[in-house]
Length: 429
Image: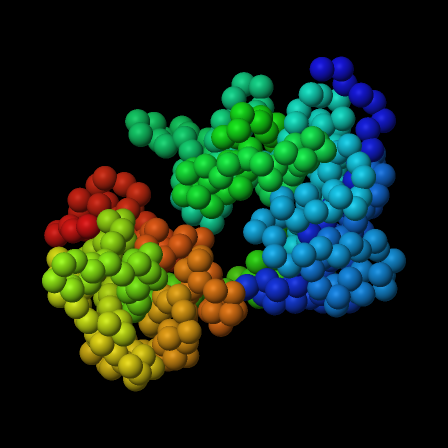
């Protein structure tokens, strides 16, 4: 392949209004400007760029971008991923190379983007992205996506799990994937024809679709980046940094958790209900959720089951796991949560709830903190304090259990053999 010079390169900034955890995020005020304006201003400082466009699905964002002199382009609100949105933009904005810079990264460094542009313009790479080194502790966080590269700086794999796994050494090095991408036009043109592999579905990472198809991803290492904006807490941290204030560190709200209440259908299961010949309902549970529940119970954090249904199958699962408390066949989940808190001796502020649908909203209000699974409807996600990265029946309860233990300094229970053996007397999955 001959490297072509003077390749037209544009930056596309996706700015979706309906964020599940922070609605209206692109227009959030930071130092007197909407957040998306900060991203645009930093993008325009990147040398070697022919144009900067903001891709949005909302007229309010479109009008705001026009008002500060930016170039907006309207896209469909139905896209499943940022790459799908970029494919639509490609039909309206012609270029050879497209940089996808997230609209919730107001601290993005122009210099990092220049490195990525240079790598694409002076190599045969089809796709490029960024990473930076992180600690082994941060690598344990499933919300932090890790990347492992070969000797040519091409990605070997992306994962929410720590990669490489330090089986016999403590010397493993970890790198966090920074979600900035550069694509050649021909990659985007064929993206919609690529099959969605099992790894992408399991990890919920769209870049694995490219790797599954044999498309290499060049990874450029940079210095540690500033925080993005995903939650109100993140927004306040970024505001403080950009205004020259010292961010006020807040204690992890999960540190005070004494009771976890979980829904069943759509949370502990994938929501499917099956019937055998006798009419008994069957449910599929995830073994890692079961182990997470036991890790909490053995660490002194009680777990309660709350369900609008009652069945012999569910009662058997509760018995197998030795769960402290349960309310089955419940119609009023608000009242049931209060009863469970009283039985556990926990206050509302010491209680977290995990749910997935409208029937869980009363429980969201009753408990001090509410979490939604990743595949919950958007109108449920906006009611939750936070959205988990995993889907119901796919390890969401385990994800939250690990985060509770981490917040309380008990991560050794799940991260080391000695911690696990020293704290878990009775294990069931």
